[in-house]
Image 1 (cartoon, rainbow, N blue to C red):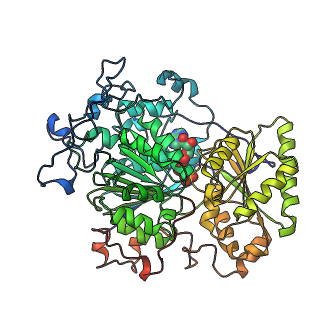
Image 2 (image 1 turned 90 degrees about the vertical axis):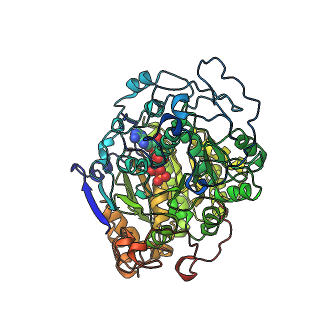
Image 3 (image 1 turned 30 degrees about the vertical axis):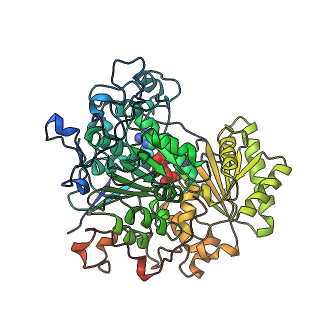
Length: 624
Ligand SMILES: Nc1ncnc2c1ncn2[C@@H]1O[C@H](COP(=O)(O)OP(=O)(O)OP(=O)(O)O)[C@@H](O)[C@H]1O
């Protein structure tokens, strides 16, 4: 039986009306919050055992195997400079066991930020190492509208669902991680964190759908870091080449920039915990990434293409994986990435579902993808914060009818309006303009530049260096307009993006949801403007429904388009024309993979193509 629980947290007045009055062309930015801590443990931890056994984690698939001889520890072991604490005790290759809990202050309040055992000195990812408590109190109540999330309906389904928490204090995250949460100035958990962290820390598989900008990264990082710290280092590494890295957790994301961002975030959360985070993505020299891997890795953040490369070179083994996370999971499982994901998860040496813990996160989860995802999960819990695939009503959405030939002059008017607002003392903000093609991005960037607007662009034909440069230039405000293709649609968390303009609307409503989600993040408000014309008729209905659901004003003419159109706006979802996205596909009678309901989510790993071949072996995504 699949239980289903719906929650509706305290009824707060909807925000859309409030927010819309705050906008003229640009919108204002509000600043972040604050936090707190505490309890269930991941299933892999050995907390009932003696202290000795606590260190001796052996993944289930390696248990009862004859002991292997393990390459001896590298001798480089630089002593932990300036610290009485032991550094990174052992090595990646066996040697003395490492105990994260004693080394990194799991119970005692922070390590020293030093790595011994062949590891580097840990760089402080927070920059100034100001006292965490001080930073916390200075930043508290800095104006973020956290209450904005309080009236979001939450639904969970699955068996034996752990109860949500209200504060970080209720979760046993350990002192080092808690200090980092304070450094991040997270005062309390967002709804997706309140529900998903206890679920993940109880060792359960999870499919979590929550709106853009609602804190999913921390939601999957905290339990992973905490689980690794609690369980301690594996007692032995399997004998591969001495240069093979054996991460304990793998976080996959669809774009290089998103992987880099997750890496940066995870490094902050893992600071002084003894858990080392490494990133690997395409488009940049592999040698540097190899060197990082050689220094040791507990959490590997990667794009699929580069990871496949590393696996084929036997420079990474997935044998020791205890945690697998797919961020932007629906994107990772659609036709662009599915073959690579199956290869990584099912055809290499990763432990199967049930032996590893799998967490899928996204703001959108088409039903078809939910069904396919069951191959990767075991007895999972589905968590939906807000409607699956809905946008947050922190974003004011405006749709304007603009003929193709007039788009540029309309854009110019918008940007001039913004500039005037800025001159009138309103805060200078960033504007993200989405176009459909790479060529379109180049051409619009040039045109904007020629017309006196400092713009840059990002798309898949740019070199990685150019992509990173463009993003930096945008983030810093040097070029406050970024023209982008969908490569920038998902996951990127850029402060001060106040306006997202869909110069070209996408064909898929989920893409629209992710694009506009680059603004209105973490409780801040945002504005999204879309140019609509006859070419976009196919998305009209989905768009009108989405806007209605988010309490946005739907123009009369859009409703007319919507009524006329057959259901569209989703290449792989909502084809039934029902309300958005639906819910847990396990509750639908039609859902059966290999033996019906009880079998659902069982052992997975069959690796069959989705839907009888509906998804062909796609080419490597250009994103990666
Ligand atoms: N508990 C919290 N308190 C305050 N800020 C938070 C909290 N959790 C996350 N944030 C901040 O919220 C912002 C958005 O978080 P994040 O990027 O994880 O969102 P997301 O849900 O993954 O978005 P997307 O769906 O676009 O990928 C980040 O700047 C993050 O630092």
